[in-house]
Amino acid sequence: MGSVFFLSFVVQGDSTAQRFVPDPIGGYALNGNDPVAYFVDGYPRRGSNDYSYTWGGAQWTFVNQGNREAFRLAPHAYAPLYAGCGAYALAEGYATAGNPTIFAFVGGRLVLFHSAVNRFLFLVNVELLSQEAAENARKTRCEPLL
Image (tube, rainbow, N blue to C red; front, side, top):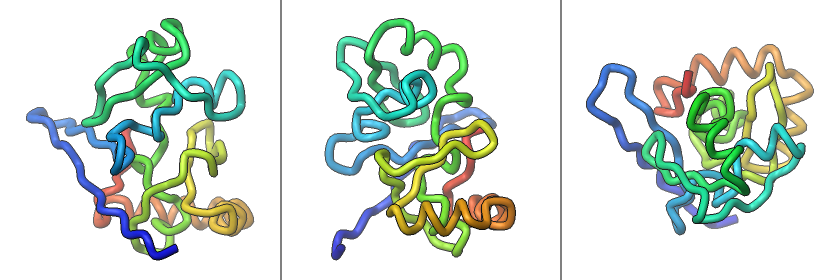
């Protein structure tokens, strides 16, 4: 409860800067879980360093070569919305790191939450809170990866 997360972003030199919030300890996106597995299996699965890919300032790991290739071809389809920040907190106007084990699919996109309570509160009023999260994304530097 008393943990503090610092969000850091890597901004690449082109006009479509990509950024993602990696795990502050290990440096992996989604704490090393395969982003494609959320869509294929419906739950997070730990990826392997044998199947890794660097994108958006973070190292992503996958359970197999097929998932890595799917991500490489369409990373914006699989990467969490709001650069991995918690969606409910973002709707409230501040940034927290999303927990990769607490998620939902909203509009076909993977969305992370800081806690199960935040997930519930967001999904109860998903239309309004999605709009507020999108409005707060830029000022909190949790811009969606489009």
